[in-house]
Image 1: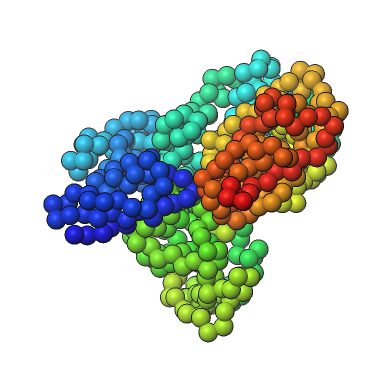
Image 2: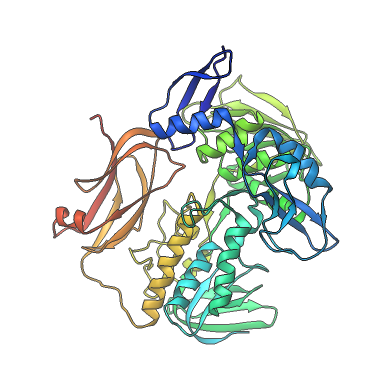
Length: 118
Length: 417
C-alpha cells in the first residue's frame, strides 16, 4: 500500500489529492479533490504523467538554435533521456514548424518535430 | 522607410501589436504599420520555446514560436507594413511620432495609434538586494534568451529569486540542460506563477521551493560565489538568525514585470499607478483621444491568449477611430478596485456598453463571489493574485445596475458570509 500525493492543476485551488494504492497498483481511494474534473485529472496523472517535451537543437554555423518539441505528450520520466537525443542532433537545411526530425523518438510513439524556423 | 500619414501605427511587434495590426488591417484600412524595435516580430514568444500557448485562443497547445508564427504569417498575408529595427523616440498628444531606424529619422502622422510595448522585468536594482555586484546576476528572461535563442548557459549552480512563471520555467529548462538549480526562493507564502508551472517545472524535477524566504545578500567579487537566504516575517522583513548561505555561481531574478510606458508618458497618456499601464476604456482607448493600448503595457496578463484578445480589441477600435468614430464623452463610469481587488482594467466604461473586465485579487481566497456595485456577476471556486479573472459586463447586468451612476466598485467577497 502506498499513498502518493498529486496536486491538481485544473484551477487556482491546487487541491492536494491523496491516493491509496493497493499492492496490485490500483487506486483504492482518492481524497482531497473538490470536483469531478479534478478526480479525472489525478487518475490520469497517476496512471501516466505525460507532458509535451520542448527543447532546442543546434544548427550549422550562424543559424542559431532551432526550437523543437514532441508532437504528443510523453512520460515525464523520459525527458532527460530525450535531452541526450536532442543534444546530438544538428540541423543544416531550412526547416518549417511541424517538420518531423525524429520519427517515434525513443519508442515513445511521439515524433520530435520542429517548432520554429531557420 | 515609411513616413507621413498612415491609418494606424502600432508600436511594438509582440503578440499584442501583431493582433492589433491584423484586426486594424482586416477592417479594411489602407496603411497599417508596425514599428518594432527588435530585429523580428513576435517579441518575447521567440524565446518561450515551452508549450502552453494558445490553449484558449486556438484550443491547441502550442509553443511560443508556433503561436507567434500564426500571427506573423497572417500580418504578412494581409499586407501589414513592418518597420524592424525601428524605435519610436518621440510621441506627442496629437499622435505624431518620430521613428529612428538605420535609414535615419522619419515622422509618422497616424490617424490612430496602438501602444503595444509590452513589459520588462524587475531587476536586482529595483529589489535592492544588498551585497557585492559580481557577474552572474540575470533576470530570468535574460537567461531564457541566452539559453533558448543565443545558445549560452548562464552558470552551473543557480538560485532563482521569485517564483514568477518565467523563473519556474527557467528552473526546469536549466535543470534539463544539466544546470543544478539549488532553490527557488519566494517572499510570499505561495508561488507567484501559475499552479501548472509549480507542478510541472518545480515538483517534476524536485527543485526546492522556499516560500516566505528572500535573498538577503550576494557574495563574490568577480563572479557570484553564494547568496544568503533568510526567512521573512509577514512584512517581508528577514528574521534574524534564520540566514543560511547557498553556494551558487548564478542568481536569477523572477520578481515581476513592469509595463513599459515611457512613450505613453511622452504622449501625455494618463497611467494607472497600480497597473503601471495606461488608463483605458472599454474600447482600449487611453486618456488621449486616438491613442489606444492593449496587452502587457496596459497590465501584466497571465496568458498570451488574453494579450492577443486585448490587442485585437485595441486594433479594431483604432481602425474605427481612423475611420472617424469619436469616443462618447457622456455616461462615463469610473471602475474602482474594492474589497480584495488590486486593480480593474478598463478603468472607465461607458454606461450600458458591453465591456470585458480583467481584475486581479490581492489575496488568495476560496469560494468567492465577484460583484460589480451590488450586482453579483460571478461565483469563483478559488482566486489567486497570479491568475487573472476576466468577465463580461453585458446588458443583463446593466439592466440591474440602473442609471445615474458615475462610479462602480468591483469586489471579491467570500460566499460564506
